Length: 118
Image 1 (cartoon, rainbow, N blue to C red):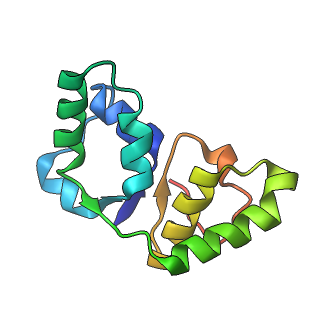
Image 2 (image 1 turned 30 degrees about the vertical axis):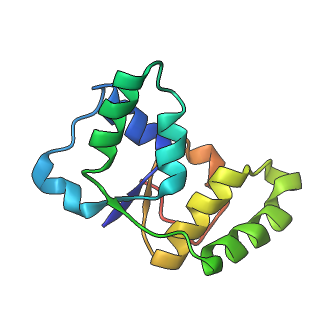
């Protein structure tokens, strides 16, 4: 099981990356990834296509435990590593669910020893 960062989902949506339908059950996203991907839609038809593709992946809940951990990560890393809110929530999700993170933006997470980056 692997958590997909927004950049991976954007590549998938844009056809730059292929994920076989039988493998999708092994990949997880959350509502932060949903929002980051949907924000790039240029019109309603594209937004509908994006949402249809996103719905084929397992979405994990963002609960208070994840938000509390994300807040702690922001407090610890925002000044030293410029950690963004969305990245903190994605990182906290990976930590709580014990999922490796597939991302092209390893620089945004490499200082977090608790996350395996793919």
